[in-house]
Image (cartoon, rainbow, N blue to C red):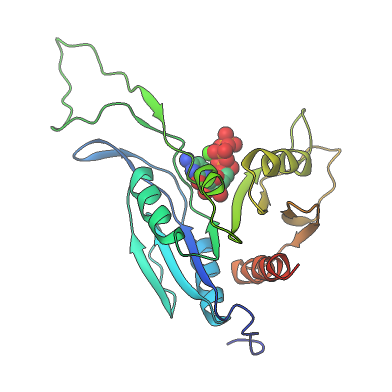
Length: 230
Ligand code: CTP
Ligand code: CA
């Protein structure tokens, strides 16, 4: 049950959200993948539709999740398929949120037949090559007044805190907003009782309190609405 009526403050906006993980094929039956559930991206799409946006959800591989009411769903598998679908949908979008876990690398070759083991051949080595950075391409080709949001999961380490790494990634990526999940236990010099940070290219930084994925989605859309109306 919804605790209260949601604002319709995203009415009139075309929003693209990517979600889930990509699978990079090795042969017809095998792939390299990741553990992304897609839940955060789906929550973002659902809440955006509830707040009045026209939503396209580009979903890679996810847990079994209900299609968010009111959102258009496009399913993809590999990072390259996600790139094509996101670029196409982004052409007319006011906001693009890259919540997907896009594989950084894919196998350099894709076998047309199932890879077999053999006692008189050496075991295969998998060589990887870099996938395109979809977020970086969106930033490089951004439309006028298009807002671009990235996601990152960071831990603190000897080089800096979660926030230090997040600030550097925001600069490197060039997006407008970066949603940062603080992963695992930080080091002793980090005292963080929140789930992460929401950083804005204009320097605004808000902590994200521990809470549900719907609550995080609401925090993200509040920040996007502020950014658009700044
Ligand atoms: N991303 C993307 N395309 C890729 C890789 C990542 O669009 N090929 C997006 C993710 O969807 C996310 C953001 O970039 O919104 C940050 O992803 P992350 O993995 O944290 O950053 P990377 O630049 O890949 O750096 P790292 O080496 O830390 O993985
Ligand atoms: Ca990455």
